[in-house]
Image (cartoon, rainbow, N blue to C red; front, top):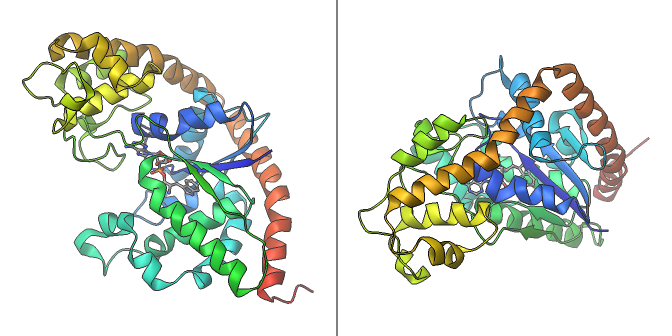
Length: 332
Ligand code: TYM
């Protein structure tokens, strides 16, 4: 059975982009794969973070993932800092990856912006650790949103260079699993920007913890244009906000853009937005309620993560031990 690995950062509350771009796919893949899902707290400290809340945010996110349908009994759910194999292999990969490769990473350029001299060196080497996350388990399939595509290409470059330099066939090739609709959910305020935890406007995103009234209000206020919805997919060309809302509806309703337009084409945004809000509330409210229920017993969530870390370490440690031998370390 092919092994799945994926991760999510515990910075802020998970949002609809995380859910439709990644987590929903994580849940589905549990049917016929061995899966490891990781709350990547090591990655969270590459940007300024609040050390007083990081632990709680890590637990909250784990609870939200379970509420979304991640099964921590049949699969492995853990937080990254609890399994040291990630850092051990991450260092090796930092020595395998080339400056030029990392210099090309668009996410670094976006996040560093004009402040390149002042961001942490961890933000620059972030993709090396991400490659280590996956390859420490010899995972071959990685369900992510479209924004992680370039990082996964880099992970393959690192694996290939490692194999080539040390004359081994040790690390496998990895494949990105990117969903057909909603691979890139955009901001509700600006159809050219992706929905993001770091956007200063909470109106730009639907959080998985938002209540029904908040969801409805955010969708009502979402930016659109004055035209009615088109009847054909081509009519969404040049209308990023309309395309985004139609894509969200399609993903939630397990159809595609054409399926949504067959139903709502020719109608104004008023009717469509109210149907979209209803659908969002129906799909997300049970997740919010279950997250709250789970967090009433934080010790239980922590125990799940502890057990997950033990199981993850049992898989990763022998693989990373072998990688260290291949590199040439004395392991007395
Ligand atoms: P993160 O925490 O930013 O996002 C978690 C997952 O959600 C997806 N995603 C989106 N999908 C569609 N539309 C959006 N607006 C949107 N925003 C986020 C992301 O693509 C991701 O799949 N570097 C990763 C975490 C990571 C990881 C890994 C992922 C660390 N190690 C190993 C896979 C494998 C990140 O920051 O995701």
